[in-house]
Length: 561
Image 1 (tube, rainbow, N blue to C red):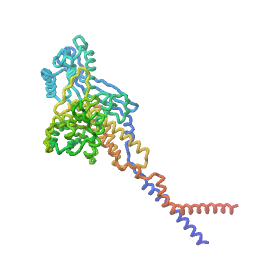
Image 2: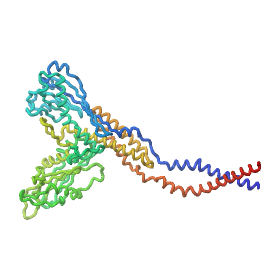
Image 3: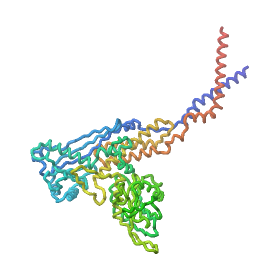
Image 4: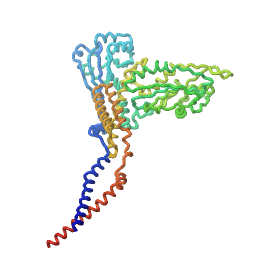
């Protein structure tokens, strides 16, 4: 009896030891080793980004030239004045435009510069005196009777960040200073909407976040031609020669890029990085059959057939698989001798003056006709491409594809033509405003979407690297919004680029694939075969011990009775 009792005691102690080890050691270790690691994220700050409230501030210096203000008005001229415009896009997005106006009279050196005979010369002289910072504007108010501008022109916009505004009849003698400033501010805002940023441009930049109404002008097909904002772009110039047997084509693409393209890309360097390459493709056709038109005495391509040109040509060009940046294609096509000349016709059967077309978010194609003498010996002759003509077309297409849209200025506006770089300073500013807002909107959408995804799926691992990228994106977004509100456009653009890079690195991190980790039901299916052989005997032993304890307790009470 004593040995049996000892054996039972030993069995009970062994069972309790196993259960204690499982509960105190096994289960904590199992939970620890199977718990999904999730680093801390600034969820409170991310929730604040869901409601986007952007403040765009621009500095405008209004300079009154001699003869536009009376001496008494010059003494009372305020130093600064702030104008605000509030626009509510939807329940989660709002915009505030702030115009920080600073008033002053022209200096002696500026008065001398304004004595130049032409508006272009004045623009050059004023730029030599001082250079306005990025995103700002200087507007000179000239007298109503000034002969610098034609009589039907009331605003001249130069190549830099300066403009000449003719004073109106409302500012003539007898008007109070408040009346003069009220008229001036109305005209200044009109100039800003034209050459700085407009509400339509900013709203279109929010297209990834805000659904535009069908009647919105930016929903037209022309507004969709530009590429989305990207930290880099790949540009490829291709020469397609389907008939090298007849045409030995020569093109100085390296010199043309250096002369015509590089100045524009250097000016666009704050927006993105650009890489350029070129290639020559022989025996490559457009893939669309041209038809001979007796009215034009030439082969023609209709506007409807241009959409079928891209895919056959693109298959021969190769791809930029080594880069994730968007690719801009510019193709120069020299038709074979059996289809010369070849022209592109519009819907009214009229020839395109440039004999070229562009495809939205893809690139452009130009048809270059060769007029030569073909002999019976079928020998090739040299063809030297006029790169000035070709690059003029490609640069115009490049501007459109990068988002430099042509302006339709109001009546009475005169815009200076682009300089040798092909891009005006205020055009660059206008594009930078749009790209900055677009980057902020895209980055906020990416970060908030990532936060919602991580909140809904608890099995996704959040590594420290992802948490760092998310924190960097949130910090950059806050800095970009602050700089935008302060009017520092260059810094705002830089922070917005950092924000979109960090947000995309976090969102597309390969470790954020929840399919790599098992849901709870799959975990139980895997671990039950491991724990049942150990757990069932222990549970049965505990059950026997409980029954034995209950039986002994009953026997004890029975003896007492």
